[in-house]
Image (tube, rainbow, N blue to C red; front, side, top):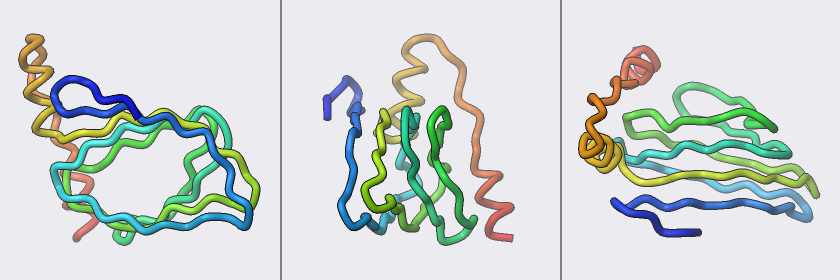
Length: 115
């Protein structure tokens, strides 16, 4: 993990688990994460929106609402990815300092999910 300015972190994953691996997560509404899978696969089961896989070449972006679920890796399956984490508030502040307009709100996904 590498710490960046404005409270962001760059995380590089290069792992494989013998016997598989499963871990639960709970993120608050202001949690920002952008993850790009370089190789392998990670199965994600989000409590409200369902399940899917992050695989080589795919990207996942955290919603702007609280979220929880489980991520799982298969037995011996390699997973390589790069992730940038921080807060949505911090990201907007950082981008605003660069003269970029406010980010579009992706909470509509959460509203539709809740309905």
